[in-house]
Amino acid sequence: MSPKRLKGSVLAALALLNLGLLLAWTQTWVALEVSVADALRTIDVTGETVAPALSALALAGLALIAAIALAGPVFRVVLAVLQALLAGCALVSSVLPLIDPLAVAAPAAIAATGVTDFSVGSAPDDAPWTLSGWPYVAIVCSALLVVVAVAVLATSRRWPASSRKYQAVRTEVVAPTDGPRDRVADWDAVTKGHDPTERAADDEPGADSR
Image: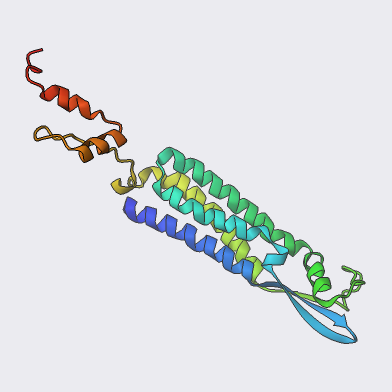
């Protein structure tokens, strides 16, 4: 695989995986069945509730993509390590709801139903819960982000340099060597830090003989 194609593939993988985290964050992770007035009511609890940090971590990862693409080899290493840390935090945030889904989803059920005596874990038959597949999607995306971050560390030195249009460009105003002085041109020269009188002094008779 060519260095250019390798760079594009790695950046595309980072984008897709971070977008996958955002998508999982918006979906239902836990479904609770709560008894309200002798009737069962299903409460869908999304990743926004049980894993609130996931969106910030995914957005930070998306912001890093442009920086990784434009940075030099040394800074790519730093940014890749930062992406690995973000992915590790996302992995922890995705796993925690699986440890005790009822504990993380119960506050949302209380807020939705107004049942204040809802006791977490004391009556599982009255409040059964089901876990969707989206937490596992978030876990897979987080783990793969760690792998891709390691791939950036291993391959970034082979990537081509960023385009010249993203590099700093130094412009210099060259004053005309002949012709009469113009007030507008003199003003432009002053605003750009040039001294318009220097050319006038050079144009004086006998300037070359000094």
